[in-house]
Image: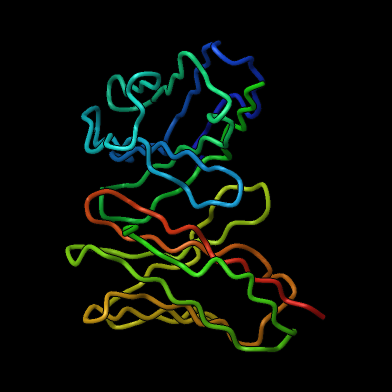
Length: 113
Length: 107
């Protein structure tokens, strides 16, 4: 069974530029998560989708971050404009339901210079 | 107060030792709990789910204490390959992670 796919794996951008990340969850998984993980810290939940609806986005900096999950499958996370403190690994995960274990993609390592 | 808290460590133990990690959660409505393992520069991978009755998988044992709102992970007979960061998570309808506990197993 294919796992969670993310792209790109690495991205380097200048501050104030925009960037987008893509995630394809495990087939049939209704719940999709985006996490930000800064070096030395645990994953921080940015947004959680149930099918194509948002369950929680309380930690998403909405002035610069946006995410969508059209048709309840793939998802994109966008940052515009990027700041230096956005340098982190962005992890996408999916789970069968909102109460079962989540499986992670390999992540996108973002460096803002 | 953070929703999920862990002692970041590092825990430095010799091979063959038994080591235990605790993780506290603040929301009594938490429904499910998991332990993940994360290697350096890799994504977290599910280690085990934590059930009310406790569960064991080889050298690993997970326990849940709802009264005191903590979960624990016990690793027996530590191997060098157990060196990693261990993340606990709780689910209240959203899946929240602690900051992770770093384990270093020395020869």
